[in-house]
Length: 513
Image (tube, rainbow, N blue to C red):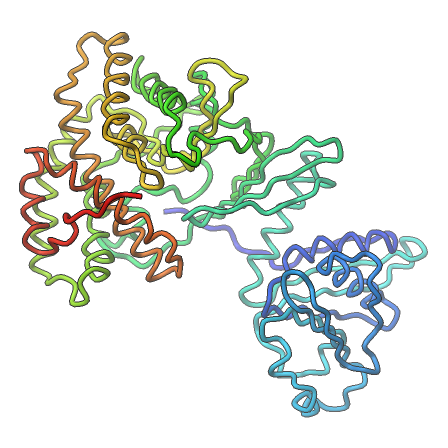
């Protein structure tokens, strides 16, 4: 279980001149969100209005926008491409009771509320807010100031993370780079593409330490039982090991392991699928990556890191996501505790065989599928596949990653292509190990494919219900079709019978789009 270091919610910054104040405001603009309160404190002439003006201009994307001080109007509203900004100045406020007349309670709804002299609001200030404190620093030169960004309440972690990002980029020589948000994934990780003035790019991965959830079994949270990484240490170690094997994991330029930050090589945006689905040549090369990874003995990380075992507890708690989240999605009444217990027992028997057959174990990257694979045409062989997500790597059966690729939850892999690539994988494995048993592998492939499909049905239902991400429901028909295909294997007869008994609609698979 990861021990989190105390959060420091204060970020002090020296501002030698007005240009530095403007640059600081632009950096803080990146943190702004609708509904956020940003208060500015400091004496008259400290530079609060200069900061606010630069902040509004940055968010409005208009460098010459007229932004007068609202000292006399008290509130000024600006429309920006992302959200409105309400700029308020409470200097002339005599009593906090006057705020009601200004529409204080409604001012921040759906807008960024930037307030100078916010201390005049007294107890009406919410506990969760950002504060910028600015003071003159005449001993450091004319026009010099000292500032501090303070995260109150829930914003403490935001300030601590942005301070760590600034330190990392400054140390790595990327502090002047433009930062653009990239689409995140279904996890808590976020990514930014950084671009220098000369066009050089890199990726900033933001993966803060995973907070412990409530205990669900053995006094442990779900993440610990499922063997999910709690920090980015495993990412860094596995990355080095993959690169040592000649595979195209991104080079890591700099990292702050405690803060969960890594500045990594930008492998581009060309994937292994197009508008028509999987690109066969690229999927074949991705299959070759797995064959190379699963051959030639265990992978060794340069720092000695050894991934945790993908053991029976981990595999079982994942399939239980179906009874917890997917079953209520398709049947309002959900399942009885008895039905859920039967489901767990049937899976325990099926998965015990896989765990027993996993010695010697392989590295299972766990998310080896199209969203995490990039095409690098200028490289050769298996190095043409860029691999970017392996944070939750475990030691387990190699069939899991092959099923992840060839039964891709995000894009339909045809039966014909799946069979062809399974044959390709088997040939590559046999070239390295003539004793490779394809029949045993095919059995494990069906079991692992069914386990993964079962887990994903639960995850996608959870993303909709708990996290407000209904877009993942569009993939359910495809995943159900994969599940049905796997359950035709004799090794899973008991699991299929359970579905037929308790939620038969799951196996009435719709055509996968």
